[in-house]
Length: 172
Image 1 (cartoon, rainbow, N blue to C red):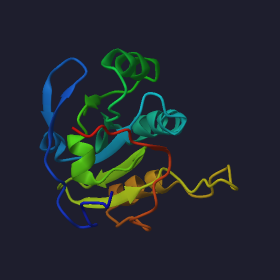
Image 2 (cartoon, helix red, strand yellow):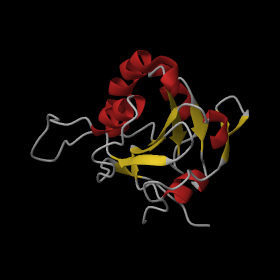
Image 3 (cartoon, rainbow, N blue to C red):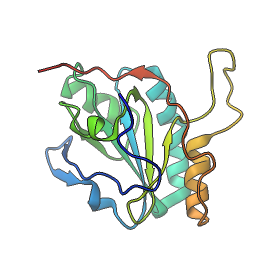
């Protein structure tokens, strides 16, 4: 799947329900940096990203919001709820039909899209630069992108290849 957005494009609006059943729109987060995390309860790469992001969120306070989007078609809601609670994820939206994942062209979990306070896409891609051969990151792309935006700068790089588990989609 090809990314539907380019850096500098406005984020695409979507409307999804959180795990308690309340509806939310992407535009609800306007005014702060928004990190869209296309996520899986079963993917170890998503679990690793969660471990890194929760402390960073505490550091960023109200400057950045993490919007976790549970988007795997094969994951039941009870698994998503249990995993989100175990990992202390602050906010999870359920995307059972991959509506938001398809809008953004998300291919892996995790796959990150960072929007600035005006809702403009400024970064998309991976958490960091881990590879098959290099198991320790030398760059933390997502954290660097958010920190750059907090300081009023553009992220560099603004696009990196995502890695993780392939998002499970069922065709209808």
